[in-house]
Amino acid sequence: MTDLVADYLRHLASERRKSAATLRAYGSDLRAFAAWLASSDRAVAHASRFDLRRYLVELEEQGLVATSVQRKLASLRGMYGWLQQKGVIDKDPTKLLKGPRAPKRVPRFLTAAEVDQLLGQPFDESPVGCRDQAILETLYSTGCRVSEVAGMELADLDLDEGVVRVLGKGQKQRIALLGKPACAAIAAWLPHRRELVRAGKRADPGSLWVNRYGRPLSARWVFATVVDRAKAAGLQQSLTPHGLRHSFATHLLDRGADLRTVQELLGHARLVTTEIYTHVSIGRLRDVYDKAHPLGRERTGD
Image (cartoon, rainbow, N blue to C red; front, side, top):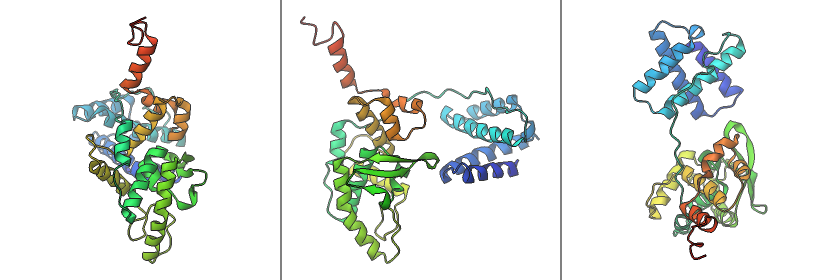
């Protein structure tokens, strides 16, 4: 079983080009399942749908939330599908197997006023100040994931056109759009970037974002930048880079953008993933209701 898990993880890394974080998560899930099978003296090739269902039930009884159980099931589906393709097993025991239904949660997002509060806070003219402002503007302007922003390359940036090429999930490339504030903030950051790279006395890493030693910023650093700057702006709710991504999608839809366009901008492979953003602000719902409903506020005097 351990060898099969290792082979499958190598397949994900080399052929599917999964990220290091995904490989760690899948590896942890599958090794835990391997240990569970071993405790029952069972082999992966002989595991039945009943065995898998019992495993999922035990995970729930241990207190795992539905989303965690679903992720573990996804890991198992991937491995068993691969084993069937390789001819190791005849039937995939995960077929028709369903995990617990996770409650749908509306993503948290900033209002337009809160975005103004975040981006309008005072930034000093130091390299760090200019970089932080440019990162925040880029996150909100593009709607990119934190890993996509952290991985932006200087060579993929075109400020004249207001675009940047990013590498998304599954190593898929797409073009992200930059608004004028983001372009201006990046343009103000680039001279500082050159100075930091020069002062670091090392080859230019090519990354758009670098630290004071001229080295590329990690996704964790970008994450911390958003958290710290949100606190500095006095926002009442906690904010992460994904919160800015939610805000980007929500504000586009709130102003009339169609779902397919937002799907492309977010880099979603499936439209159903984007549909979670079809919630709109209470203000917009009230506006539509008042104008369309026979007894809405704007029609009560008719």
